[in-house]
Image 1 (spheres, helix red, strand yellow):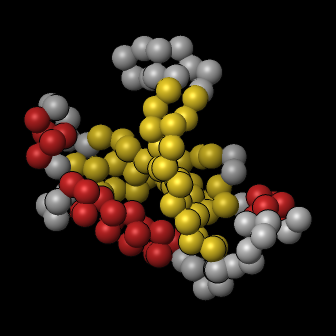
Image 2 (tube, rainbow, N blue to C red; image 1 turned 120 degrees about the horizontal axis):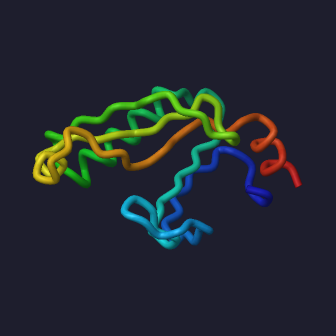
Length: 115
């Protein structure tokens, strides 16, 4: 983003390393996909529509998505995103938390968009 001004639309898959102790719900290494969409006139509705589209493409048209408000220090508003499908029901769960999402706060956008 330092070399290209908006609009910026990118998807970045990759391995993540965290200083977590491994347990039943945490692993210090995992795969993650991050997306960033910076432009004028972009809304939270665009974010939600994109997430719903991706989940339906990956998990089928019957998947249900829900967005729950959450706190992350670098985004506002922030969401935890859960999905429900035949897969979650096979696991004995109604909903499974997958990604988090949010709107980058102004200080992060300014710091990253202007060298």
